[in-house]
Length: 150
Ligand code: IDP
Ligand code: MG
Image (cartoon, rainbow, N blue to C red; front, side, top):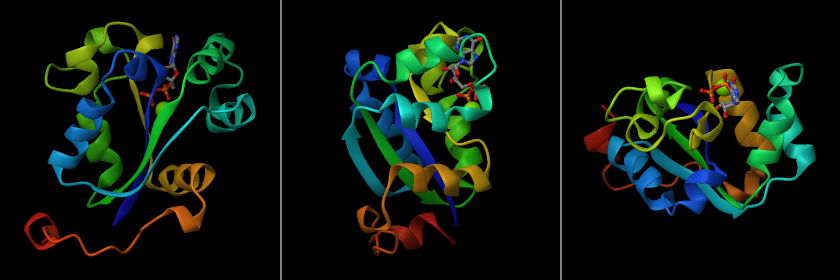
């Protein structure tokens, strides 16, 4: 089972789309093992986006992700990382497929509504950056598990 970190970004929060975003991962069958509301500190944002530190949009990205409370979600499931990214859609919303979150709700790259980890390794690291072990319900027996996972 892979883990992935989802962030319902400030634009989705401001637009009242948190429920819509969460619903799409739930209906996919991905299992919520952690979820909370927080306003990301600049320190945590810079750590989360460290790979983009040298990019020209880095300052704006940190301003954006710290600008309002966000919902962070830890998901677990079969191929959770790639499945979640397919549900999220391409980074640039104007080019994202219809039916994806970005393709249904967004237009611009700096307002793309949701984050999802990009590898199984980063999924583990990012979940650990945002959640203490005590905040995760990693092994709860979900009653539909046998109908979602083979
Ligand atoms: P991803 O979120 O689809 O994984 P990344 O390339 O990892 O995309 O970029 C991280 C985030 O940085 C994007 O989701 C977006 O919010 C922002 N970003 C990426 N490229 C640009 C850009 O060219 N201008 C403004 N923001 C950008
Ligand atoms: Mg990324």
